Image 1 (cartoon, rainbow, N blue to C red):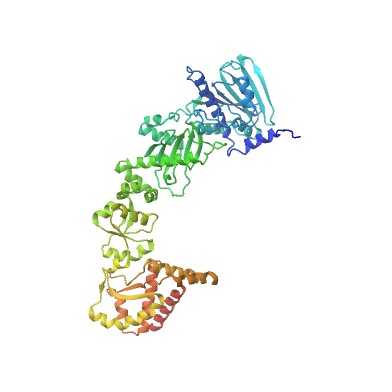
Image 2 (cartoon, one colour):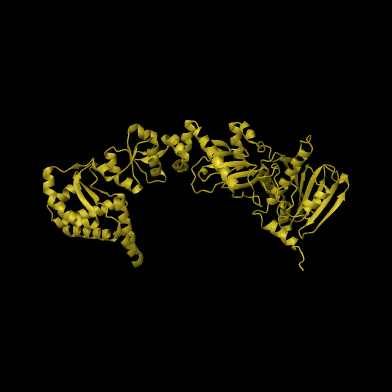
Length: 609
């Protein structure tokens, strides 16, 4: 015969888990008190339409004789009835704010849902004393809860708490009370502002001399209309007040964003200095105006790292600790919609502001432009690229030339920069992040090949061949030279080109460059891995030989070929020039090329004796 039983719960252990392990910061109890107080005031406004003077008052009291400090937290909200005290304060996970399924709840104006927040106070105290005066019944009740899981409830005389609302008394644990009054007061002030900055309820903190209205200048925004009603200076000042960091005081630009439903809106402040694409995303989020986190990453799209955004939402679902949002379809949808709103705002910027934005955060916009053709078409004239003349935007480049060349790598750009400059070739260094991809993408948008990938033949057209008599004079020498150079997969070509002070230029296509790198890695690998790489090389179709252009305008090259020295000596010098050309092009040398240079230099030294 079966018998139904119930699980037994160690309440003291449960309180320890909830209070000491659910939250990442012990000061989260301040948030929970603000949350409960604000919800109580909102509930009173719903119950009594004439009530509109809600406020929260906080005081830190010090008993010099007992060396103790007590936090007194008072709201003039709706209060709790006897039944509500029994249900909501004595039952874990029972909340007075209704359902926990945020997406379907109609009670979006309430902050709390889980019914465990008050227990966080046991992080800083061993006993919670709560006195509440119910607006519904007029009764005054005292609830004393202890960290061991026990509690007491008793009714008090109405005059003991004449005002409707609730007061919570927390006498701090010894280690916290050991802090100076000033330090603990400053901690309260810091965290009460952090958590309650955007709450519509005035929050007052009493010090020894006066009452401080902590959120006086930061609680103006409760809706998109409120945000849009602020002038430019007020929005900037709002951001400076919230973020506080010294570098954020130079804020100049921002975007007001919202999603399709209007239940999430934001102000995205443009960080006034360049930041890494991998920098931590420090967006600040509020749920029903209560602070959630200042390091929310998922609500804004990844590419919006150039902003610090303040987000207000009524629709996203918080995790139990209320320090992040569940990663679900709602979060993904809101992120996409805020991203789309940000793109629209960027397109609507005045040209001067847009250029300033792109100059500061060019990397972010290049990343975005790679994925968004519509945005790229709008901003591409203002995008800066590295060219032979330094930083230039595409509008400037295209005003000078109908076709602009670009390289795939930084090293390739360096190899041909001097020759291209002498030929007045418009050339972009496409080796930096996103640059080549953007230029290829632009060709498709513009409908023809405006940006052309540099090939060896693009520089060859500017080379002048030898005169016929010079070709005949050096034909045999070049033939013998190339028979030796073929070992290194390179062909020596003697001709004229500018500038005259460059003796040689090494050019190879992408396939040959990949072959070189594969061979170099195979040399440095063990027998097994080296054999695998060797097999890969054999399977690949051989690329055309690389070209070593020798400039007959150059005094060194002329001296070598007209020296009358032996073929072997001339070949040794050319081999040294070949290795030098590799070094100038930033190509890593293979072992046989290092050996080649050493032998060539040794031969030259011996020939000098």
